[in-house]
Length: 186
Length: 279
Ligand code: SF4
Image 1 (cartoon, rainbow over the protein chains, first blue to last red):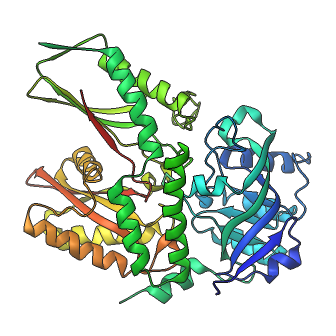
Image 2 (cartoon, rainbow over the protein chains, first blue to last red):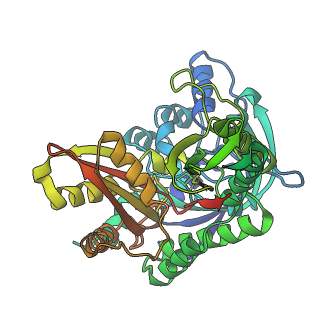
Image 3 (cartoon, rainbow over the protein chains, first blue to last red):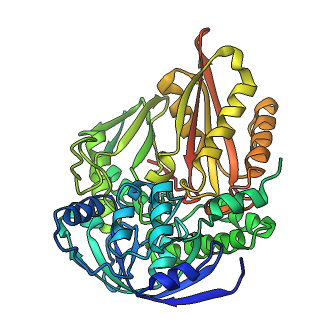
């Protein structure tokens, strides 16, 4: 665990994902994709039917977010993370087809961790509720699929130094458990 | 009879929807700052810094501090000597519609919990009405995000569980919530009433000003003890470890049945939004 911030660039290869450790402070630059409950349901249905996803998932990072509407003049509305466990049913399949990183808040479940270990993927925590601050690192955003879902549509975002913390890594490292244990007072 | 127009109510509510979502209360901001100086985890300190910076940006730019701009929950006290020409409920809903549209706030309300169809204007609001003496209307708005609300619980304890049973329940609830309700949290506790009554008491607890003490020494002590136990859990900011898990524990009690001890925990994230107005 260090105070030093690691800069990473998307796409994130499996190898680069594996090199990140729980507790690392990371700044992400590049293109990321957004999706939450409804979009994940649709994407996994598409995979099951053998259809194409709205973007090539190879080495991509997916951000669990449903932004507020964009104010004129801004790239995006407030855009903090949503609770990740609601995507637990879908994430293993997304990782299997190429996703190497997820950004959300709160712990992801054992099924997702297994997939992260098997394929090499990492789970980042963004600060829940720091939505206006995070929006500043989003330079461009456009809806690329499922427009009818409104806030839940899939967006392609260009981000610069998006601040996240590696919460669960590809080797079973888990800051929700280790961090809590470290500061727990009996 | 004093008369109040529905336009006045709608306009006031629209403004409140926006200011509640843009401006974090000074009491919450101060509590976050204090927590940052006391937090021993470097990751935790970094997170608390992001949260206070975020509040500053939201306020100065007039954008929501969190993208989840919540369910519009209201507590409305209507003076019995007030006459509203038209529907008070509709006037409040019209205010929510206007405020959520003009403030670029997210619309998160579904008309049906199973069919899940978005009403697209964040209505209907959830309104708790109360009739009080006087010729004024007091409106409190407390937009509530899903993340923290989902970590809340009502439990029907046995009277023999007593204070210890309630305390264990509260600590267990916070512990199980981990990082999901966006800690640091404010823990609203309702003790007594009925099944639904305890939940409303818990929600009302969240309206209290941070830094305030419970007027009854017995409950003030219980709040302090709970806060200490919760902050020793180690959950910390965002659940990533630290000693700032909660900023406060607030208890509200009510009369209850001889056979019951209802208790409710309503979790509130650091985006603790509420505003009030008197018309
Ligand atoms: S729990 Fe609160 S701070 Fe976290 S995402 Fe929900 S509304 Fe925002």
